[in-house]
Amino acid sequence: MNPFIKKWAEQAINNQIPQCSVNKKRTPPVKPEINENAEYDLVYILKPSEKNIDLRYSLRSVERFCNYRQIWFVGYKPTWSTNIRYIPTLQNQDKWKNSIINYRAACNCPQVSDNFILMNDDFFAISEIKDWKDDLNVCLGTLQDTIKKYAEKEKRSRWQEAFTYAEELLKELNCNSMYDYETHLPIIINKKNFLRMLRIPELIEFQRTDKILHKRSIYKNLYPDENMPEPRIIEDVKITLKHDLSSKWFKQNWISVFDNVTGNNKDFPKFNSFLTKLFPNKSKYEIR
Image 1 (tube, one colour):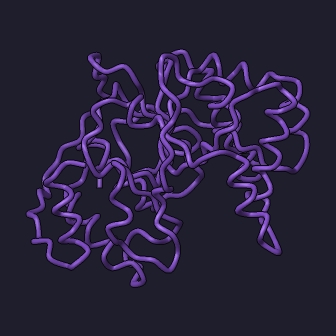
Image 2 (tube, rainbow, N blue to C red; image 1 turned 120 degrees about the vertical axis):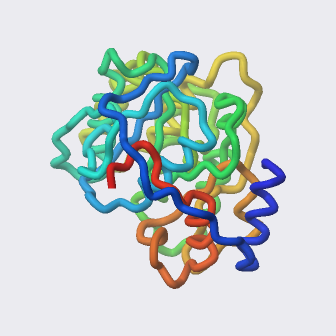
C-alpha cells in the first residue's frame, strides 16, 4: 500500500485525520470521456437505487487511484451521475438472476472493451492500482475450504449453499481449478469467454433453478487470466458487520462494506471518517 495512504489509514483508526479542504465548484463534462491510453473499461452492475452513497465514493476512489478507458453503468443510472456510458436493462427477477441479465448486457455491447473490470458500487480503491492483472490475481482459498467453513453452521444461507453447487458444477465440467473467487474485489472479465460460459448446457440448466450461481468462481476457474501465476490467497476485504475500521482491513488496495454502512451509520464512525477524509471532493461523475 502507498505509505501515505497507510499512514492516513492508521490515523483514521485513531480519529487523527486532519480535515481536507473541499472544492465545491465542479462543472461536469457534457460527453463521457475516453482515455485511449488505458486498456480496460470499468463496468458497474447496478440495481435501482437513486441515493447510493456507496457508488459516489466508489467513483471518487477509482477516479483518484485507477487507470481506465471509461465507466459504464449497467441496469440503472442515478440522476445525479454524469460522464457515464449507460446500458439500461429490465430487472424484474431476483438480484442473482438480474445480475446475470446485466452481465450479459455488458458482454453483448460492442462499445464495452473486450476485457473489462467488473465493479460493484461498494468497492473502494484506497491505493494506486498500478497493474490490474497482478492486483486482482487473488482468491479466498479453495472452494472446499469455504464449504468446510460453512458446513459447521446449523443453518446456511442460499449464498453459502452456492459454494457446494459451484464445486459440483466445476467437477461436472471436468475443471481441475477449484478456487473461491467470491472476493469483494473487482474482477477482469473477457466478454467472449463470459458469454461462452453462459452458453454451457449445464449452466443453462442450472439457471432454471432457484439456486444461486457463483458466477465469479465458475468463470475464473474455467477461464483464468492468461500468463498469470496461481492466485494469491487473501482475507476478504469486506468489513464485517459489528466491526469498524482497523488495521486488518488495509492489507489490500481495496475495501468493501455491507449495505447501509457508508454515510451516517454511527456503528462505523472510523470507516466513514476515513472515507470522507480520503475522498472529500465530488468526482467528475457527480452532477450534485
